[in-house]
Amino acid sequence: MKNLKKVRKAAVVSIILFFVAMSFAGCASTKQLMAVQEQANQAMQKADAAMKVAEEAKSIVSQESQKAEQAAARAEEAAGRSEKAADRAEMSADKAEKAADRAEKAADKAEAMANKSEAIFMHKMKK
Image (cartoon, rainbow, N blue to C red; front, top):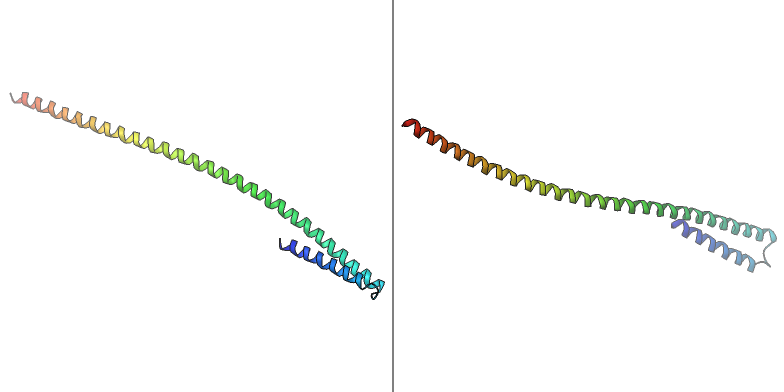
């Protein structure tokens, strides 16, 4: 952008110089007019080169912007998949906890039954 401004400025200055040179055409020599014309031509060439560079830079920026947008979309998709996986993991953990609770209750019942069986056995042994 800065180069583009410089090029525009140079082009405007060269055009102004050209018109100033033309207004002094009666006072200036042909050599001087040719020199001013050459300077104007060089300024225009520099302006053209700067425009080409600016267009190339714009193209590169556009391509990189597209790549960044695509990367952001992929990141968003990955975040969505991660969130779903976390939800599934949480549900699995809840199921595992419930299964562990059921197993603990079953173990408590089995222990109670074993204690009853032992008490009955001991009672019968005492007789």
